[in-house]
Amino acid sequence: MDSAVFILSTLLALLASSSLASGEVVEHFLYVTNATVQTLCEKQVITTVNGTMPGPTLRVREGDSLVIHVFNQSPYGITLHWHGIFQLFSAWADGPEYTTQCPISPGNSYTYRFNVTKQEGTLWWHAHILFLRTTVHGALIILPRDHSYPFPKPYREVPIMFGEWWDSNVVDVMNEAVAKGDGPNDSIAFTMNGQPGDLYPCASNRTFKLKAIPGMTYLLRIINAALNTQFFFKIARHKMTVVAIDASYTNPFETEFIAITPGQTVDVLLTANQVPSSYYMVAHPYVSGKGARSTNRATTGILVYENANLSKAPVMPLLPKHNDTAAAHWFYSGPTSLVNAPHWTPVPEKVDVKMFIATGLGIVPCERPGACTGTLGQRLVASMNNESFKFPTKLSMLEAFYYNASGIYTADFPEKPPKEYDFSNYKNVMNKDLLMTRQSTKLKKLKFNSTVEIVFQSTALIVTENHPMHIHGFNFYVLGQGFGNYDPINYPKTFNLVNPQIRNTIGVPVAGWLAVRFQANNPGVWLMHCHMDTHLMWGQSMAFLVENGPTRETSLPPPPPDLPKCMELGSIANSNSSTLLYS
Image 1 (tube, rainbow, N blue to C red):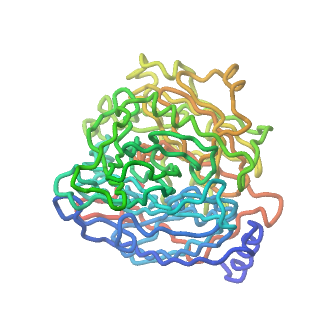
Image 2: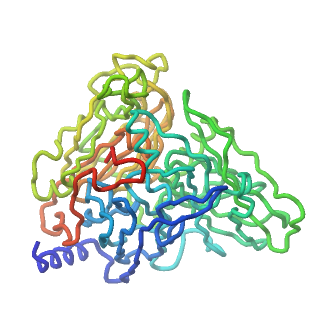
Image 3: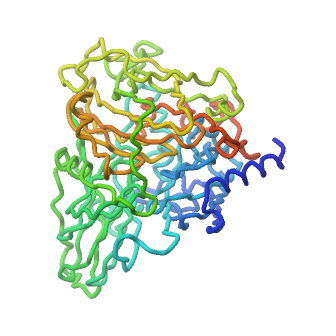
């Protein structure tokens, strides 16, 4: 690629994405390395960014241009995804493995360049390969260009990230699960800002503490970075007011707890208006469906008032029960958008493409009879419309789109499932006629600027769960959601087309349905997947191929000269005890 052509095309794309003239270039250097830490009783080697977990918080203002140099000094291939960033005309910087790029191989580097355009609020960044986002993640805070919020200015802003912790190498955990065609071992702990909290052994000094001044209001930027766990979060004797979700402003929504899926962010205002003392902040799992495993584990932090009497133990909150789906649904469906807030746009009325996607778990035949421990002795997978996604490894899908290369994917993802049945009926659990699916690499082609409406329908074939669906490159309007099977005649009459939630990640209710709408105004290949990494590993993904617009400025620019190239799969990532089995 001629460097002059690349520079010219990049400049055109930057100008097309607006507001660059009022912004600044913000540069960061991120070093992906292995580090030895002690989170619980034993020391362990983990993969980190700049030696910390979570990694550095990146702060920018709306309209800024980010230049992030990533140096891979770990033993694994790595990609980083800037979760929730639109990547307007910068799809090469989105980061999902084998979708927009091949992994950065050990000893090499890649520079992500993108603008932060018409977005503000709390987002985050994370590894998008090999379960590595367990420890490779951090907050991405987009501050308003004019320094003002559509709510009272808080005294202080505090990121709070939830995570999971394994007592073994997470790449090994994933590879062992793939080898047996089953689920991975559960994590042994949860974390809050990298600390498990004092309910775990050997962790009395590993508790996140937030110091509060009586009467002051704090903006908590809450992020769920856990691989596979949804959480209920509560602060003893304190109410919170939700003011934003997934970097989109909401009408003030008062609550005593929040529910949050992997991938989501929730911004809340917390006022220190209780008797000066210390109060536990607790996150424990929301275990969403029948057949799912429960746990009594939780992560804790402590809200400590200035000049508080610390001789007493912190007050413990009473959270919703682990399986309280009614409480989770109340929260997930409660917030509404703040109309006419910064960057708010009305719901597009004309729909060009309608899709009905039945999604959940299934099986494919085990390659070696007797070697798999998944359901019915087969390989456990997840699917959408009976297609379980298999990532390519020879070339990224975005490169295949740009160079018109064949043999990497097909553009025939089905707009509806191959068979209609009683999707949410538990009587269909283990129905062999419905369980079998197939693996493929199918994309859905979309015209530039077309409006897409998707109804997700959860299925009950093996286990019913709340599936947090994430679309790369776009926000979407959440028009409606509920339990049971979707009614295409009556439910559209109830859609919220006035002030629906705007999100980039949303949970499809347990044995229920969810309707969203978005505008495909950005050319490229954009992954859509469940944000539980086990389900992503099992194939609960697909991708949209958004065609170029009518002009050069609305077309995908050429790839940057340092875009990582694919290697043989087995050489991209190896751990001490296993080789890479899954891409």
